[in-house]
Image (cartoon, rainbow, N blue to C red; front, side, top):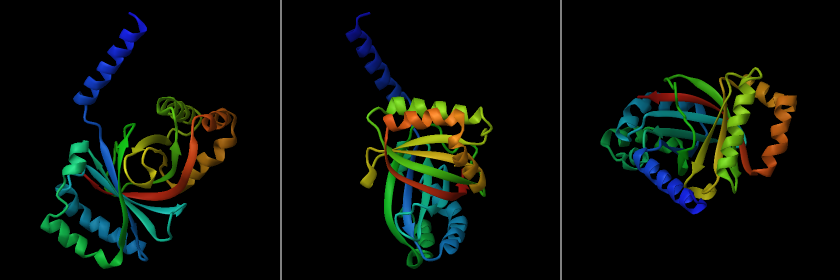
Length: 232
């Protein structure tokens, strides 16, 4: 086949695949509060009530330890089984409104943004599960090459004593970071995340340290501890 025909087949295949498969989605509410523990308690109690009507498959809350844009920021995220689910939830359900009213004067919603996961996320989530993330917002002109690089980096990490470390990526669809990719390095706890960051000077990791700057521009980094508050 000629090159033009190969490109046409590739484009057609991509279109069919996009129509046949509904990719998962995520939204994130950035809230600000002077009582993070009070907000966490509210989220644990309210998530089983607020999540079903918003079509959520899993939800959680993350508290940044470093890199928050404003002191007091927290992130409430919802995962969905499709973009349709993420856009069609009933946030005005009376039960949802009643739950939100309980926290309305104790927090401010600063932003609500929409994401498309570029790799599997939320697998194995259970209520009460906790983990720690190091997230990087990046810009790249070659998302495919960057995704291949982080997949190789994850495989290298898992082959060198970090079997419990995963990397996932999200396309940011709205807000100030639209068009960027958020890469989440996830560890079971903060100490384990710190161990992984310490290992960046090891031989298996340094080659990637030289490779990544050629593929991306760093825009923002933040470290946070998270807890799952709902899982369908």
